[in-house]
Length: 70
Image (tube, rainbow, N blue to C red):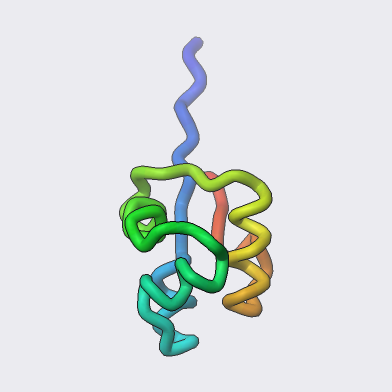
């Protein structure tokens, strides 16, 4: 029996907008390019643990609310 592949769900955009931050502003705060945030929000990029923690700190949100598998 094959196990279903789990997908990483990302809620960064939702939390970023609540904090009234642009992609560019968030990118600068976590020291990445804007494109990294774009791809992350589109589900095309899996962040490193370090980046995920940095984003969670900047957005003042638990990492488990921003990134989770389904």
